[in-house]
Length: 299
Image 1 (spheres, rainbow, N blue to C red):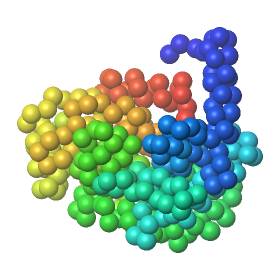
Image 2: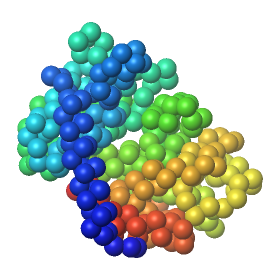
Image 3: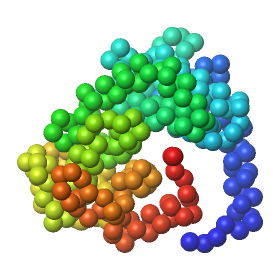
Image 4: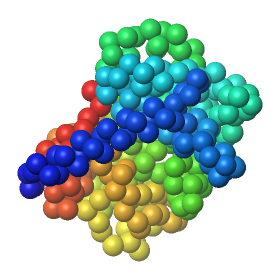
């Protein structure tokens, strides 16, 4: 890995300062909008508070130490909580000024996941658990909704097509990105069956091993992949009954490293887990880059 020189450092500082300025510009009385207000943005509803966007932005706003941004992050999370559906789902986006919430066509699973992650991050990073206490019932409803999306034998989330940020991608069934987030949510909220989630995550998204899953359903899922797909050093982007994602979801694979799903030293209560992608050369190189040059983590 090459070191960051002075010129690179100056560019990074400039990018950082411009990012803070844009976050402040896009912050309103109810939270952070996904885009600056303009006729085009408003026409496409981008000048609204998007669940996943606001939650992800909140992570950076919190660590910035800027009180204005921290306040905006908190407002965003509280606004999303206000528009939570009766069944517990956090909306794709909300327009508080119109008192409207949108839940996309086939649902938006990652908005609820990122909202939960951001709330926990706010509480722990700032040492302020009052937000978790205040939103406790909302949190329980969100976790219940996610439980309703979980396969009751494989303990992974199932989703419809185009139900996360990649809403023009044909990913469905067991999706890597969503299940990386689900595993992390299970860790931080002490959700039951996390070891089983990890076990089936390894088998389904990294099926190119000699290890055979102990579930018939999981064996059938991986059979189709092994029969026709070429082995890869990375996790598959999604797995459905008879089709899967041949594309590389870089974001989800990096998240798997940051959230502890690509380490080499893990096993589940179901027995020894299969070799993980991080043991492969390409994944190992990406893992080193993520851990050394870009030491981002969510404590």
